[in-house]
Image (cartoon, rainbow, N blue to C red; front, side):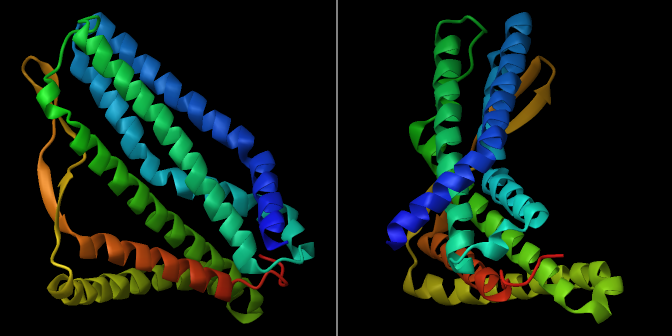
Length: 264
């Protein structure tokens, strides 16, 4: 029964957010076409590679975009006040929708990357050094985008819950924005300290090094724009802490946001 309810919520989220999703896909394709035209005119394939890389990296914001759009719709319509499901289930459907739409969009972006590579190989837009673009590097960047995007989306959901939770206390409504900004600063400072402390402890237990590709950087040189990528080493503890942080923020958001109270 609960599975059917969750499927129903996912369908509702898709119906509400499909226009947003299609707009993001169309925007991505438009940006890629602009990069393609620029590379075609200049004969510099690095320009299209740069645009394609920017598209992939921009997916860090994807879960935040989708979850934010869903929450803003709830804020305007207040429909969830009449929904019998728990706040955790409602927020979970929004989060899951953001994740699977992000994965679909990333797959489209990777298809654009494959096309970009083939265009370079055929010298239709010039050529770039394929040594700067390995499968391992692309995979590691995508993993970082997905994990970082999930964490950023959870921060947005948590702060959204805090902001609207403050609306229940009429005495602080006049100072809510100031208090909210102060809370964000204090919370992020505390989280950074706690994360550093946990990372030190976890790395003694899980000192498993993982070679990750950095987000590709671009450089403006005398002969035009060039793209390069280096590697960096992190540990398994980094990824585990990020996942724990995201789960904790989701739980706190569900706990703090009482759907029975109108968000303000």
